[in-house]
Length: 438
Image 1 (cartoon, helix red, strand yellow):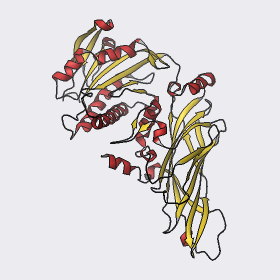
Image 2 (cartoon, helix red, strand yellow):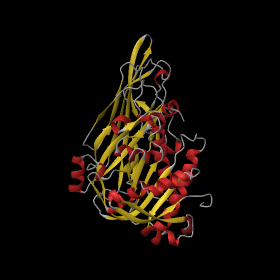
Image 3 (cartoon, rainbow, N blue to C red):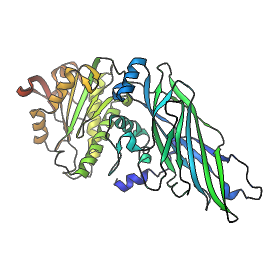
């Protein structure tokens, strides 16, 4: 998909499965009895179902992080979207006010973003690219709502939004253009960061919308205001939240793209998008709750800490199989210079989130394995494979040695990773996938 294709995808209407409600717009003021109905028929508005995703404390700005730790409150990203109907010929929108009113008054919006740039998204060739941790979580969550983040791309022909209601349970955005010439396209998306008490199990509320329009009737300008016939009610369960302060034994995974530094900027940007998508697809194949996965973007790589309490004997084979399928799809039709090939490492151990990442021996060791000469040589010497995997002896003995589904124990080669300059030595196992793995 080209950059133009991605830009235009933000103009697409909401998918039926993503529409929460479609509500008629009714005039909120009386009209001249001589005016016919048709020029001022305002149609309806389609409101998308709010998309919620957890934002752990370690991903918050410092003041909010301290507040989360002190109060125990949880934070969620909230993506909202709506579509306006086209007006009758000669009539234009001049103002649109979109408002969210939460039922729990203790739940408040602590940040409001009207465009992807403010959220931390970079737009160019391919899908929006996250340049902040908050944006990375939004990208992962929005996989279920294709095009929603593209709606937030800064584009000509769209009025600027002004937000209101920060630190309140009633908040929203207002788009204004007195001329009415900028209200194209008619598809909109916004983001809010919402603070919610730990005792609140779901987020419910109402969506309201008011529009102002202008048109000509009998050689005079006529302005009309309209609102939704009925407020749109929503009720969404709050997704699983990553406990920000708990130290626990977790499985982690690191991945890195081979030959990335030699790629020109446009290809490097596309490669990052391919990488993020392939790894997310692999986790979905392993049936992991994406909202409970802590992901750190690293440009040409990614470090992910998986949820506590997973069944590694089921997750690891599915993760590897899912990654193989995702890279096969990604590389289909790509030239050798574009192809995405990965070094991948897994590790397990006691880890805890800190102010600038994860603390724990396994968080360090997994990157030592990832960058080791044996993994680099394995990928270089097997040009036909899309990835190679390194695991520590503890994972091999506990999980892989007992596996009856691919990758099987005999598909691993025993290696020793020794990095004197890092004072690191570990007994590991190397897997180079073949066609027999799946």
